[in-house]
Amino acid sequence: MFSFNPLGDGNLAKAEEIISYRFKDRLELRRALQLADSIHQDGNKDLALLGDTVIKLILVKEGLRRHATRGQINNVISEKSSNAYLAQRGFSTGLAESVFANRSQGNMIYPGPMASTTEAIVGAVFIDSKEETVVVKGVMEALGVSWPE
Image (cartoon, rainbow, N blue to C red; front, top):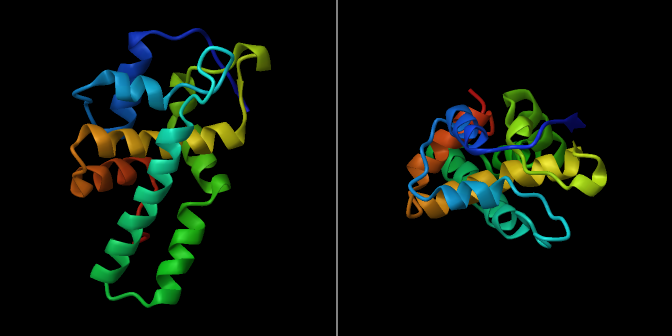
């Protein structure tokens, strides 16, 4: 869990700094950082769905490039795309400070929504970069959600 203050443009810039990517359309980043609430009913859930798929795609591509076995690829995907791991990466990189949270939950960010936000950021970068997987891979590396060395 993480508690925070109300947010502004500075928080978008902070998120861009963390992920080492500057959005062409900052609305995509804003959508990725928006948790569901009474106004934003789905929040970042659509982007999180896309991001989850893109994370797996990039991990599979990297595993194949490295001539990893299917078992090794599946193990990396299981680890790196798990909600627990994605939430931990979101908190440890400081992304939680940039999230637009649900005030009815006391402005707390819980692990599940943090994991979804991490996925949503990957999805937003995928859209903003015109589906450039090389760009998304760099963001995943900045978040620590990349193939292990």
